[in-house]
Image (cartoon, rainbow, N blue to C red; front, side, top):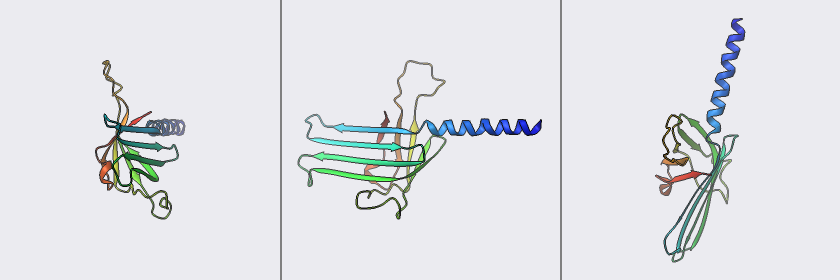
Length: 144
């Protein structure tokens, strides 16, 4: 009888943990365009179910040198509470295309509290709190 109760509790705990990590999985995007359309910045992040991620940064600055820039990053992610931590392995995740180092990067997962019954709309997003990539700090990327 006790074995059945312990097994049931373990199953419930496992399913609850799995459901919490599923909330982070998905595609995130942010596009910033100035009023003249001369400067474009795009951020795209995909968090996969298997704990891996892919990131793409695109900028088009008309007077920039070079005017168009594409940067990529990939690696692994993990979540604890509402914080997502990113890891990149120099041997596996870096090559000629994937050059961004996401080690020591942390983002906060922001969503509307389920107990909040107001009409307030809170778009689900990741807010980067820490990163060795200087232009990633304080960037909000919204879940699609």
